[in-house]
Image (cartoon, rainbow, N blue to C red; front, top):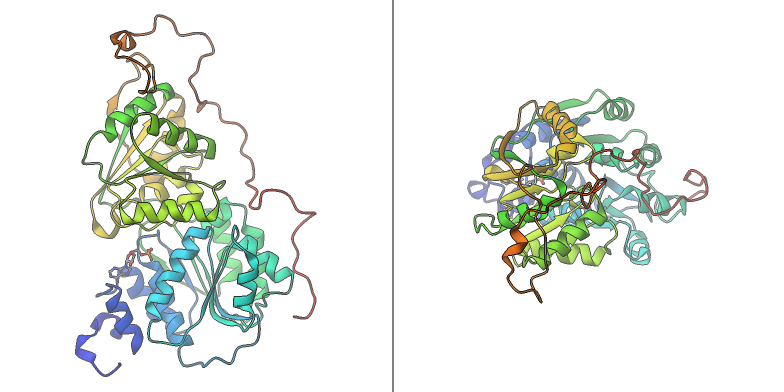
Length: 446
Ligand code: AMP
């Protein structure tokens, strides 16, 4: 399996990757290393900590998976019960599932065990899977915290730790769990931290968790992939439904992900799209894990053309063919804009990102522009046009009167959704309700 050197991608071999991993990388379509892989793989193989400023789509999964696999292969399966040799900590379930898939693909032909520990699905099978110990555990912080606290998972043998999408874990309120989890791993561990953006808190986190890391910066902070065309349509909130439907009538919008700020908003957009004749799947935090996975699978396979998502649910989704990202409304956090539009234009493909902006959202738009360090082009402004009146197509007859502008706008009628004065930001609660006090790992011997 390892003697056919000619057939192997030379690039990865030069970085220090050997054996079955080269075959597996080639089979996974990774012919030449991406820049992040070129920089991170040799450093990680040397035992250095890594601080990676890179977005999903940059190839960072293989950048940490290949060297970890390379270190794990050959260690044999002498593991202590309930332990994991390597831990990859990620903010969302979808990302965890995706990473495990890549790891398994790259581990093909090698004897490496993986486990997924994430919320929203049965913990019993996860506990069972962890019982003999595994090589690589991919987990979200909430469930992992629970299982560590209960003694079902032991991290003291974990010598490789990857924190992926650290900024998103911060946004989601996981930062204390992350710190606690890191502290529970082996003190002489090797750590890689990846983050699309580097807010101060993440700089602080990496300073406390990484030792003299090699900094690998792929896209400059907050910059967006050059392949993505970006524009803004100025539209009042009430007009957005029609603007969106008109847009989607264009067949060039082959595969579209629409971002809504809230779960409720995502449901409403999906419902309105259905009424306007566009079938769409939706993912957000209130959907069951199965429903989310089904929606995502349909979208990935191409049977679903339109996916409506909230920021958190869509985080890290790697679906190659997304032609358009539509921001139905602007995100609360300007950095989320970068993550959102990064869903398109992947792997050098062309992509387009269109943001629908109510005048009340203008300040959020300015913040986005500051982050991406460019001014966004307003391709259309419909704010002076009359409000559309939406009807569900079913029972109504064609009545041209519907196109007539409404004579008055009532006072206080600010549209179906208030996007202007936003409510005070709440800390997101990761598991639906406060537990009694801070989550602490028990001190019981495991
Ligand atoms: P990631 O940033 O890890 O989510 O990777 C984004 C996409 O790039 C995935 O679809 C990978 O399969 C793909 N990819 C990663 N590394 C390479 C490579 N060296 N050559 C070609 N495609 C790659």
